[in-house]
Length: 256
Image (tube, rainbow, N blue to C red):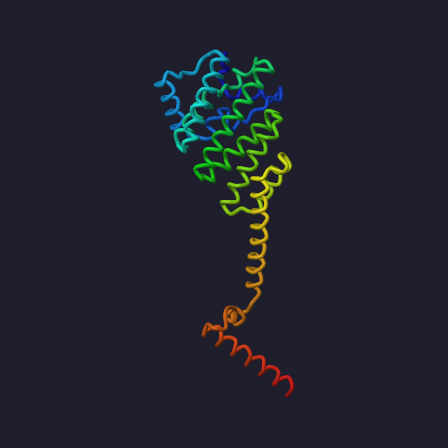
């Protein structure tokens, strides 16, 4: 039986230390807005994929939808793949009241399937080069694993790797390096992770060099900035001549 009021559920769940993100009681709403959620529910209803009241049936429906999504993913149809993954997540969305009396093995089955569905979504976003949503899905997956106390180094490494790649592609080399370093620790000697980590490390060095150059430039006078560049450029050559002339005049002034 569902508990009707969010406030009451939140209080009870907090008292027993229930692992739930109260900003998103619905996992699906972590990814889509209300209108998109309704479209997913309508599609499931039209396809005779209504959400069952029986726990095992809902897990089976989610598994079936994930498998369909995987087939679309293999062909490169990431949009349709994500639609199937979202539908799978909807079937796995049990609210707190429904989870209240679950046995530990049922809760583990549910949380593991949620983790796999999130991982599928993250992979689909990555393949489509949607870096913002790749990073978002990876964060949701890592948070879900932490809150559910799931111990799966391979899945953890995948989320961290995809988050690192997304940050690297967005230009956040420091964040990318941090995530990829953790991915390497979770799954040592993985070639793909090591290559991305090396790229992030190189990006960090380049960013630091650029930042240093920017700060050095801020300390230069306008005359010194004009002297920067190739002496083949007339403006640079003129600026350097003027600077040398000024230095000579200063030295003569001092000697006098």
